[in-house]
Length: 353
Image (cartoon, rainbow, N blue to C red):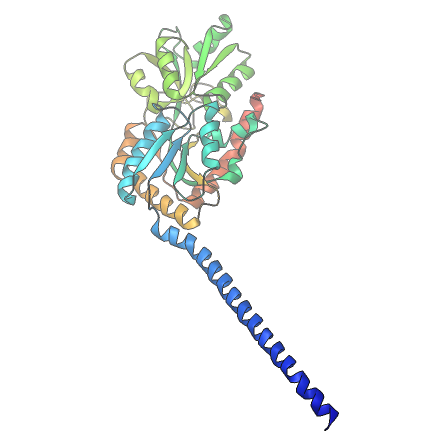
């Protein structure tokens, strides 16, 4: 017998076994690869499915101030009308404190799924960057604008018991009575705080800053005489101006406020300064990384609501000025507005930590 043929017969089972083992390995590998591919495709499809079915549960709008202020009022009207368009409840939750930091941080750290939103005035997403060295969030990277709802105009007012009727008379009174003026704000770092600090610094005045947890409590104490002046929203103050309990001296901005057409601007009152022209919007924001489709959907719905129906009427009744831009426009406006506010805040020299 040929020795070579005999060796080949002995090696044949080994080759067959090797081929069998290799086939089993390939089959298992193919199955594993198919499973992994299916898992990846399923995971990729989940966000798309979530976007297609959004919203499938209630939405929260967090207001970083207590109930009763102009932001809260606007948020509740938006919530009611947005709920009707989306077919899901929209609930407003007040998380006030620390100049808007608590509520803003809560939303910044929330799941980016479109079910937790923020409505705020500019302070927590602008001035706070200059006021706090260790802010727990960065609005530039942790949040994204959905839409600017309306411009909430602000006005310098005094309690009517204060014997002043103009900005000139207010400054003269402050110089003649150091420490007699107590200016309320709806929180550290808010526009009333920064403007008051700037006014006091540039005019050499002694004005006591009294911060509150929101505009509602501040207005209550202003009416009671616990503080005797403030810069507050036209929305919250115009009814008390109408009754004569508060006296308006000048509005912030480059033009007169729709809600107070007889009140001069600071420039018209003789105080032309860019600091007294900064007007910011009340903005709806979502956590960063919220799917673009959801952000765009919310932006379109809000923009439509601002331009007609109950929300448009409420904005008009509040003496505010409607905006209703889309997400890209709101983001662009924020990027342009931010450096202006940061410079103004830095010029006051105020730090809160």
